[in-house]
Amino acid sequence: MGGGARRASRGRTAWTRGRVPAALAVLTAGLLTFHRAVPNSAGRLGSLLESFLPWLGLVVVVLLVLALLRRSATALLALLLPVAAWTHLFGGLLLPGPEPGDHDLLVVQHNVSDENPDPAGTARALADTGPDLIALEELVPTALPVYERALAPDYPYHAVRGTVGLWSKHPLTGARLVDVKPRQITGPWSRGLRATVHTPHGDIAAYVAHLPSVRFRASGLASSRRDESADLLGRVIAAEKLETVLLLGDLNGTVDDRGLAPLTSRMRTAEGGFAFSFPTAFPVARIDHVMARAATVGHLRTLPPTDSDHLPVTARITLD
Image (cartoon, rainbow, N blue to C red; front, side, top):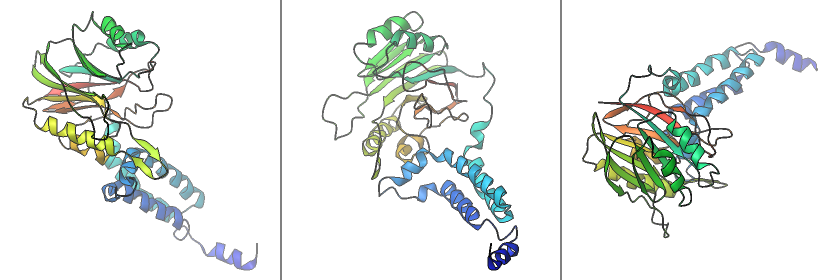
């Protein structure tokens, strides 16, 4: 090392080293705090960021390691900003759920996959958890009779519209199709269902939905169809006359994604639990949801994998 380099190294202190990690920490805090300010006009970058927003916590961990290696007080101090921002956004999801029994309804939501090789086994696994309601998506005609037979003993009431269905221990009435088909889809496409569930605690409007998939492309996130479908569903739920509403479905987006704002702005989401549900091999996002109006969605958690590419999710519901 030359004399100039040695002098430069000796001149650095804990407060002057690590400026790059410190700057990255401030940037990470900014993205966490002001993610809504990231524009969606080009490639829906805002929605793309929000789809994986909790994973910015890993960036904080990497920056912490760099700060320690650099022995940088500046970087360590700057890291307090993203830590505080992440804790504010997601810290509550780490809290333990309520004690079993402290709820009015137990529900399960599952995209069973149209390629599921064992629908009977999947149905039994879901029924064994003992929920009041089971919502299923990707019900193909060949598998539907299998689900119906397997669930009939414990769930005498069910309704199916298109590829989505609802099974219930309580009577169902008024089942109807909910049109959430985007304009660009011209063929048969039925992925929305609404039914009234007559529970011991009162009538509930239950919606089951499977919104269009999003695609990751070189130009960004392709989610216009999903966003349009979410807007259609949000309008229907806003017009729902029953006070208490449950929404169960594969919404192909996270609760932080602004594309689901027509739903998340009108309904409560889970109070606890990350419950990353997709893909089964390495879940990175919760796109399977339980939301409610005039009710509280307690700790949301995933169930053991079935033969689907999604994990089932379950939640306890407490009515207002």
